[in-house]
Length: 285
Ligand SMILES: Nc1ncnc2c1ncn2[C@@H]1O[C@H](COP(=O)(O)OP(=O)(O)O)[C@@H](O)[C@H]1O
Ligand SMILES: [Mg+2]
Image 1 (spheres, rainbow, N blue to C red):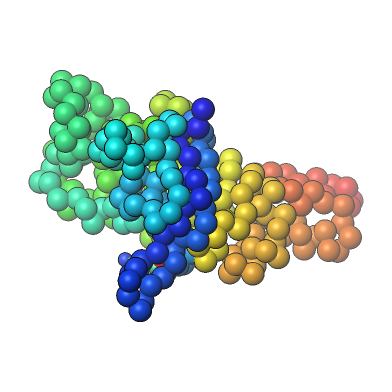
Image 2: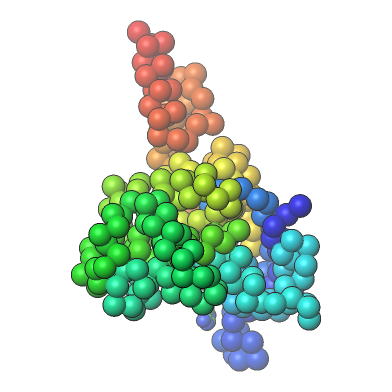
């Protein structure tokens, strides 16, 4: 069964004002368990709005959201339950750090959720390991950390709640390539441990396609494309019309194909692309 089903959702901001803006026009989407999904789209395409719809922060004007088959806006459903099961980490989550120690910040959601303190300790240690911070960090003030470390603490605070669906809005925005890779690797490790589903919103085709198994492309509030990265990147023109581009890896292979070289253009991961180019060079010689 699907964990989350988004069924014909519409959402507008500024309803009943002259500034009414249709942010999501008609979106349907199903999210199963243990998925790694990337959501891509130009600024203003509706990505953040969709995330807020997914965890019940915004109520759709039309359509339904089903969590494990139950209508989350139905009378019997407890929306608080959805906030815990579909955990969202918003853009620049480190701006929401406010406790005097890293430990208290990570524990904040656990306390809210009513997790006993003995269990909290163990969970915090596990999640700290996943994001790659040493236990000595627990006593530190989050405000004395580097930007990348603060981001990791903020992500740990969402991960520690072990939501069934973990949604991250631009988790690597503003991070250097090394920290970006560490964040994605920690998401992968988190998923291996918890078997949860992960949805990442990203501007970077390169980063997201390296990890996501399914991509969803939004364009001006519409769902433009959905499929495996290879399927989505085979629509280079549609992507370009939506102000997006295929990853640089696919782009290079497409250019080689245009030179009449026999090259596999369905590749997008860095390692695969490197191997394909090496193979091509060997064939040419
Ligand atoms: N609080 C808001 N009030 C009015 N319009 C908004 C608000 N938030 C977003 N929008 C508009 O809704 C559309 C979708 O925004 P958003 O979901 O934030 O897109 P994205 O995350 O893809 O950049 C944009 O046109 C944006 O300007
Ligand atoms: Mg956004």
